[in-house]
Length: 263
Ligand code: ADP
Ligand code: MG
Image (cartoon, rainbow, N blue to C red; front, side, top):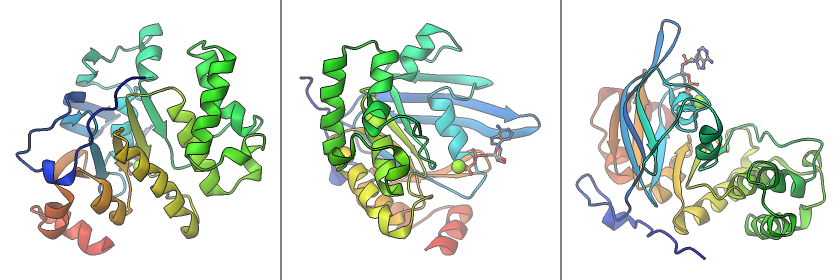
């Protein structure tokens, strides 16, 4: 078994903190357009191993696009992105391999409707990584237990609640043994009573040292689990800080305005 990366405790993190983890995801001067729309503008962002970064900002500010560029669901027009030191290539087998270093969980759970819960979790490791079935199946059961849906393995997604489906989606992403997990509004499509069971799984992951980028409107999660909050507006990172500092003392007018509307 590989040693777990160090977990950053809040006291270790701050504007000037030395991060115990090495840089894992590095974006340098990343730019992206959709036609005339400059959706990501000069993004510089380094995410360290074991760090939990929460991304917030108004609708349309580029949060989802940022996530999608990190695993190359979207190409970038300028700049560079490295994952664990490897440059993200434009296409090909190498891209497929590097992409599997990045797990992604979406707002809409995106499970395969005609496959069982277990099959949803084993598919990637079997088809993409060509691992042995017995190894993959054992790991899938462990992951389903870990996210609290071990007894649902033989059901189909439609037989599960939204919260259970999203936890299966997390297990499915973890089955590829990613180096970093991206969550794009993972609880936004859930009924309120199911939000916490998903956030609790995410908190556990964070405690275990997983490197995570989380786009969310759940400010309680940001306060309790994030090492750093990034505030985006109009395709730019306008502000970044510890959650304590960001929520109590936002520096930009944009952030103050945003927080006054949601808190
Ligand atoms: P957020 O997640 O912060 O709400 P998005 O990254 O989804 O923002 O979108 C940022 C901007 O880019 C929005 O104006 C959106 O309409 C636009 N956009 C997103 N995806 C596409 C696309 N595939 N084609 C054209 N415009 C897009
Ligand atoms: Mg979005």
